[in-house]
Length: 302
Image (cartoon, rainbow, N blue to C red; front, side):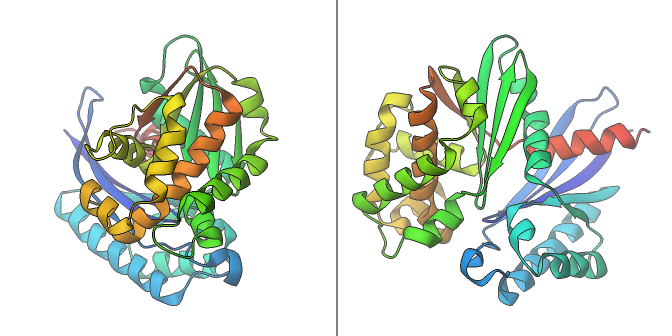
């Protein structure tokens, strides 16, 4: 009998939800998915807390998603929360409210656990042999993972993400070339001590999650038309830094608030490319929900 499990990734920028059907043969297919740009991490570096209105919005989304999941026959609703709840003084309060008012079983994961889940959810998409650098650029943190022959060799988590970096540096829309270049320098100075990058110089780079996928789609825009290759990222950064977020949002089909942070994601990606000198770059989906699902299935056999 097919099993169905709902998974949520409560990120610093976006709350991502999906329901996966698992066949008797172990096959998996996503039958429903949604995302809400809640921005739990907005202003968190300054205030140290998640804004009450954003907590309320997240709870509303979780409640709605749970109803969808139960309607589809999900036997479990599981999730993880990442950098925003790690950083916030009221993170435990939010976690308690999720537990008391919804049926979601959510835990806050460390940067190391976040990297492990991201890798486990994406391992099958990485090369069977050789070295790779997996970079999960999130809203509040960036996880870097060195991979050899589809095995995790080393991982690190750094407190620099597209949301917190945009909040730190962006004051106007569009932010402009000089400001985004300053974001590249900030990200570079944060990541230049990375042992993962030092061990992965020249490897293929995989940018996972929304930032990677949205940047890849942006590069394909007819108005942009920049090859999604390492040598093209200087031009990509320049192009995205001077475009209004409303135009980016309309083209990508995402919330304007999410589009406003994308130049910061481009800056972090450019910093990683500058430090690692990869042979190639590719965008892949976020692996966190897939990793969490695999973890749950391993401990909940039929």
